[in-house]
Image (cartoon, rainbow, N blue to C red):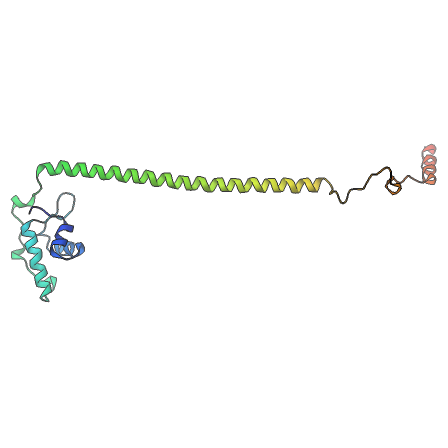
Length: 178
């Protein structure tokens, strides 16, 4: 059968991965981890897990279960991964890192795109406000068409009022004294 990962062992025994991890951590002398910190289960380990499940199904508590002396595995069983598995594990790890980096780059690009879109919208709103303000300033600076006096030469009421002759004479007399 070979070495199984936690997920495969959980599927084989019909329990969750969390349960397998909890059982393995309860009996650290019986279940060893690989150099990456993952549990790897051999046929013997699967037999121990099945034994634990049977005992729990019969009503025993995990604390009351003892596994064949809870002794460490022989040195020959501690490293069950073949040497070429290290190279493939390293390649798999590098592949995963590259995937994470690509995913991270894609997410960063998406975030920047959203920020740029938001800033463009803000700039467009500011441009519209400037146009509105310019129009308002222009209407304030020039009187509106309704308030402008009509200068129609043909209309007698449109003629500019002239100063009366009495006022002109008064002004001339004041300036002649000086």
